[in-house]
Image (cartoon, rainbow, N blue to C red):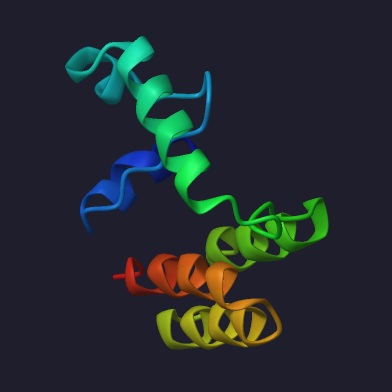
Length: 102
């Protein structure tokens, strides 16, 4: 699932741009230079200092999504619980991920 995160996000009109980590689908539609330019222009406009997830935050999110053991409701509740302890900008990212859970 982790390798398809960018495509899953695009279903909700979210374009995840990680420099030099564009999906094959993105690269087949857009040039890497264009994706990099979009990323850089957007980063200049928002400049949130706290938008980078720490390794601990990232792993807690991935473990919740990738566990496969819990129910959809439990996974969504756990993600929202994680989000509640974060700044607003990070909360929006995690809520977006929670909305992608079928």
